[in-house]
Length: 562
Image 1 (cartoon, helix red, strand yellow):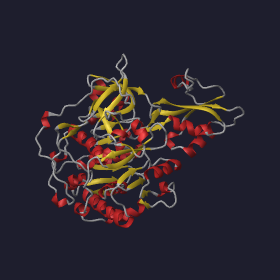
Image 2 (cartoon, one colour):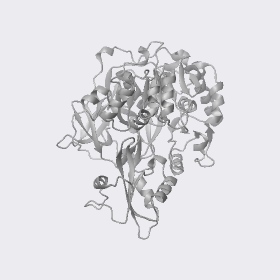
Image 3 (cartoon, one colour):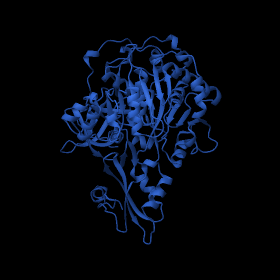
Image 4 (cartoon, helix red, strand yellow):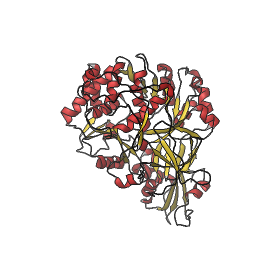
């Protein structure tokens, strides 16, 4: 990483004067709920080299459970006919934590890998792991068997918690728990927050807490290691911006949100944390994403907030029953994972008229614990293409801007990862000596607003999933009929981008699109399998350096398939 990076001025958000107040120094840690008084979350931003942080803040993730204990009998988790109150959830966390510690020997610093679909048991497992001091690794439920094997080698978990379908991909001899066996523990737990018992609160805020996986540029999953501070900082600034700091909320506060993305995504974790701290009811779908079920849940539970990727909203907007549903409860639609066009923005506001200008576009990445910048509906309407202003603790700079002010977007935030788990080389390639994360995105800053113009990394973002083009290429190269291959992302109206593969076949090859698709499905996660193919006997377009000319390839790629 070059040490002579030319940067534009960093953006440092100011703190709302309306919320400013003085706070005493952080309260000492304690391990018992009864010893905690209501903690005051600060909004005064200070610099603790090298980051901007809140002076008064939580230091350990299990402390958030103590902040949420006040919500007691309010409903917290909903899936189908199941409902768990906050008290139910806390009792279950305490029971599962004891199960992990006493029956499976999980100790502080051990890794616990979760491989399961969204469910109350998933949520309880996450918090139970953190409660005993484990480092929790939410695995991608769409991984191939090869990717699961890689994650197991990388993380070396003491225990894998998963559902039956995903545990089939876990190597024999690995200690596992089927989430189905946790359900009786969850449903039978009693005692509310008092049942949490001893929480692992000792330690530093920079200790590893989570390993959240991302594709990166090599294809096989990398583990972004998030400290306790990382996730807390991202949630804290989101709460400060929305004026919903936990200690300022009345006891009857709350909101209803719908999560249609996976909990193993950073956006899912953020939604979970915000619901916990805000007394929120968090609804999950049953089974795969179903736009009809989304509308049903919104109407039935009077959902107010639905965070999604644009492709999901498009499918819901196109569902034939949308005009028959009462969607008046909807107040906010945060969108991320792909750009939001003015046309889509208008359609969402028409379908959910009470959102008014509260359709937002957020920009962030796993390596920064999620959101770096956000744009309101009004800002997007006034400045099409903007991804908004940075959050209060985020510093954004543009590296080596060209004449138009475009360069790589660099970010520094206390929410960023410590590094990639057991991969110092990859870490050095993304975090520089000044602690800035090199996002791989190209953009410009104008009057404090960030606009993303492209990417410098060879990544396809399909429906919010990062897909490393070189990894897909390496898999396809192994097919005996493939002489050369280049993978690019092509614009897609629903997914943002789709994976497109241009393949030069060997002389006499018999492989067709169907055969290559089947080959890829056996070796890649489902979202990484190309959906557009171009098979040819001719050389692929090349640059003067002898590499595939992907810019030209995108321009000439046939849009009607092979």
